[in-house]
Image 1 (cartoon, rainbow over the protein chains, first blue to last red):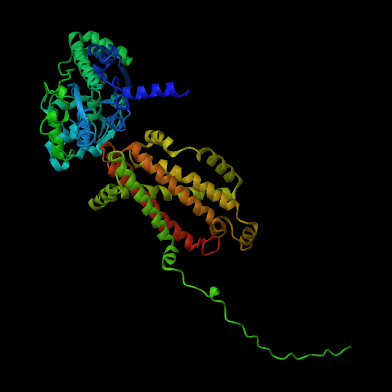
Image 2 (tube, rainbow over the protein chains, first blue to last red; image 1 turned 135 degrees about the horizontal axis):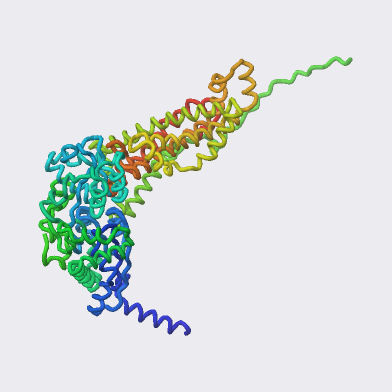
Length: 333
Length: 292
């Protein structure tokens, strides 16, 4: 008798909730460190997801933000279900797409911007890729598998032949960007080269006159190319359509926000990341015409083709739309 | 005195009845005879584990998180056939063996000093108490600063992980050598190094062997962990690097194959090296049970 009301409530609750374990309206996002993730800083600071969710009639949306370093940790968090949306370079996203095709079907949501990565060195003898010797060490965040290593492998295959594409992996060392920059500025370390991303190569080239550029990822890819992307599983995309659309709209608005006023965006970056970099320095980076903070993907198909040719990817993508969700199909390459 | 009278007892033959059938020795049934062998029983344990693994992995159906036993076996065979796994294992083992030998030599010097002099004893007990609990991996950043990115820092860390457990075990073994043996040694006029080599080491051999096994395990563990953290040493990675790289590339079956290789090497070293050493020394001398 006394259990009738609680059991009635439980029965109604069970009928009301959908079969999915979590109802729509929560999203767990992770970003990495650096100015390349500016669009996500804007989305978080201006609470754009909550705004667009309300506009769509979704009501309250719970957004959980995380900051992790490294594509491998991102991939593992996504696979194990700890995160819904993760961000990393194009090659790690392609690797995960390749391994989960037909299973979890991980695909990209949108780009986060086209930014170049510079291969810089403080060794005066090194002017081109052929000048690197056994004595040099190239620092990258994730040796062998990250964005920088894959881009270097593609160029190595072009210059030294497909069979030798891992040639520079033997002198690559895994080191986070800040540590590598410090080593290059100080000099005298075994680490004398760094495949660096913004703002680190700006800092290194400003602080030490011996540091010079060997090549840029834009040269390797044939023009401005997407650096990093957001990606998620098919399950999250299908089970949370409204949240997904709200997120995509928030990203689009973030792009407009940055393009409208670059000084305001620089101030937002410093505030959101608690950065000690001077405002002028950050503004200079955002205004640099090489850096395009856009959600439209550019030249991602170059990675898909080249990495398939090198045997890193087992599946061939017919076009860039194979590894993007359809909301992004309007424009891209 | 009374003359002892010897009574001659007649010979008697006691005829025994036949033994009851229940007491006759019987041959063991075939399956029991097979199970007598150690290796067979262990093999059955391994087969059952493999079957449970396969069932679990198929039920999970997520081979990026848990590949099946068959997938791991295939990755292992491919790795061995292409030579990659063997080359990387060889690199790891060569660094390990060099450091192991240096560690043994250093431990021997330290404990001999401790056996001979009071200063040596103080030095050994203080150093061991300080450095034994310090994990070798914690020293890796310091080693990288001092010795750079090459093999030097790896060997430094490995010698640390071998030296202290071995010195501790050897010293305990030496302390336990009975006084009778020591006096016998002094009777022969043995002094110094000959005394240590001919009296102390053989008498303490069970403790020394146990120390050797423990420090091998520590060194192996430290090496794999250091390679995961440290990356490629002088351009050629070892087994830990193989595991790390395949985890980055999301080839989880190759990660498991690398782990399986670590296990296989552990089993091989235990069975071939340590057990043979035991059989030839301490078990033959009656210092250790033979576990029949």
